[in-house]
Amino acid sequence: MTKRARLGRKITFIVGLILAFAYVFPFFLVFVNSLKLKPEILANPLSLPTHISWDNFQQALTKMNFFRSLTNSIIITVLSVSLLIVFSSMLAYYLARTKNKLSKYIFLILVTSMIVPFQALMIPFMARFAQFVSWNNRGALIFFYIGFGTALSTFLYHGFISTIPTEIDEAASIDGASDMVAFWRIIFPMMRPITATVAIINALWIWNDFLLPRLVLTNETQTLPLSTYLFYGQYSIEYGQAMAGLVLAVIPIVIFYLVLQRQFISGISQGAVK
Amino acid sequence: MSKVRSTKKFMKLAFTPLAIFTVVLIVPFANGFYYTFTNWDGFEATKLVGFTNYVKSFQDPMFWSTLRFTALFVVVSLVAVNVVAFGLALIVTSKLKSRNILRTFFFVPNLIGGVVLGVIWQFIFNSAIVALANKYDWTLFKESWLQDTNKAFWALIIVTVWQSSGYMMIVYITGLVSIENDVLEASQIDGASPLRTLMTIKIPLMAQAFTIALFLTLRGGFMAYDVNVALTGGGPFRTTELISMHIFEDAFANGHFGTGQSKAVIMFLLVAAAALVQVTISKRYEVQR
Image 1 (cartoon, rainbow over the protein chains, first blue to last red):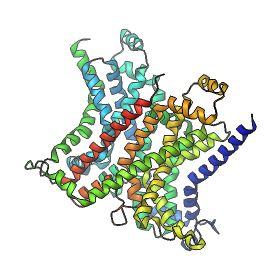
Image 2 (image 1 turned 90 degrees about the horizontal axis):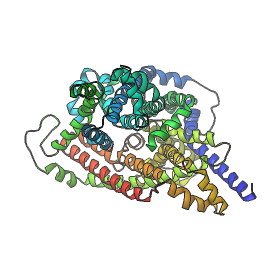
Image 3 (image 1 turned 135 degrees about the vertical axis):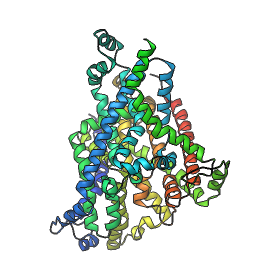
Image 4 (image 1 turned 90 degrees about the vertical axis):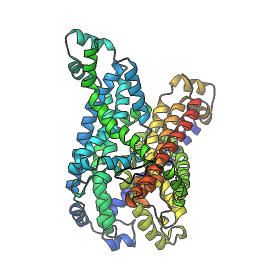
């Protein structure tokens, strides 16, 4: 390696290190202050806590109903993502394997619909679904997520199915398998990589979504982003507790990411490029 | 295939998701479009009123200031996010040993929803920085940035860059690693400098990544809501409301369903037009391989 290349690498490393520090510093700041008392935070937000107190966390856990919101978030995300996978993979299979005008137009409408921002239809949407929402708001929300997520998920599956040779379907059909059996027993297991992508992209979106849950959910069925927002609004004066609440809100998804890091990165790059 | 069999196949595989998609997305979209030409008040529409709602929307001075603020936000965040994201992608695709750890760090803010990120930075701008500024006498930060429209704009940009650059970095990484090694080796043998290689070989060959990242940031800029609500809440005095928040407030806080929905249609047209122009221009730079 030449001298210049080595210098270049050193500079890249230093710049990278400074940036990485800047990217995680806000989280560090929140964490440090979640362990301190209010006067200590105001005196110097950068100082380390003189003695560690978990009291803020205890307060935040109960005041933001942490476990209830966490459960709601998990239920809503898991059910929506599973159903999205089931429905959009079948739809994509149908569209990719049926070569006629109808399926071509359906696919075109799905792709075009991805440009429509939710805000463009949320007002008539809420008027139309008011009754459904008041009957079962969590069920309604899951139903909405299936509707809004279908286009992108189907699009991702469609691209993948096109790479699976049709001979496989034909062989299954000759062996007497019905369409459903052929799909679920043979095709679906072959699509594991794209299923991971679809799952991760949708899970991140649904887990963090704020606007739709804000319109649909009530106090009892709040998800984590909603309860964090409301808790922070009410207790932002109690800095320590507010910070503890933010730490709690961040922890579940960060753990999930650290465990499944490789799938996250490859999932996102596949989802974005197609 | 017989007609009966193909209909059966459609019912089994495609009907349910298409029905949900239609009910959730297509019907409200079409409804909303129609309502803007009526006297709809959130419950019923009794007569057609032509373009009245659109005229009223454009007569609203708040809407104009929101449009200006949103346009500025879209342009500045588009440039800032993509410049930073491309830089990050170059760092983590270099030969550094620490590149994987760096990538993990850069991506973390993207995992967390805009609302949580927004309140984290609200604490930083309103409390942490102000406390430090008073302690160490930094004049620029003594007053919270969120109390001043211009500074609050930059606060929004900072948080948006922090949030979305990690995602766009992944898009650029995918573009960078898709370039064949022999092309890069050839340029090295020909004696091209790293900067020259970047400008004349890497960037043109990964133009598709730019098309995608620019499209996503453009769309994200128009649709930004969570960070806006959680960070500035539109304040001071509704001067930092982006278009999403403006529509939300107009319709759900003030009950103006007619103008709210026509503003929403205007927003859709703006997003569609901007995206169309951007994708057409970007596509021109893509090299066929």
